[in-house]
Amino acid sequence: MLANLWNAPSGFFGAATTGSSEAVLLGGLAMKRQWQLEHPCYLNSRPNVIIGANAHICVNKVANYFDVEARIIPVSEKSGYSFDPEGLEDRLDENTSTKPYIKVQFFSFMLIF
Image 1 (tube, rainbow, N blue to C red):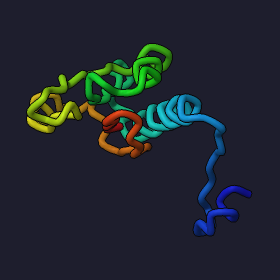
Image 2: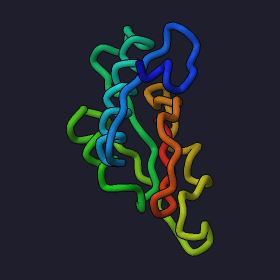
Image 3: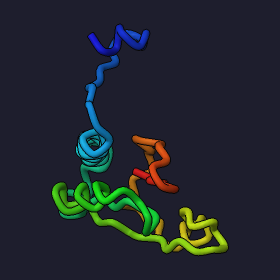
């Protein structure tokens, strides 16, 4: 029903939420499940997310609740107190899930899943 509401092609589905925390949690769970489907050989591993130190607190809850490693990039005056892309490459590896599931700015919120 939601896919039809948003005119999505057939075969797509989704969920609606009433708040950003709920959306982040549902997106994080969906990200982890998709990562597990795409990486069956990593059964004893866990995905990681790369976030700015100023990310919404709920992103840390995704990491804690769903066994995802949070890799935090500091913010600085140089980066405008936002996610500093200079620290990104050093934190990437084969377990980094690279599919962004939410692109919202709460307070300079940047998240890569």
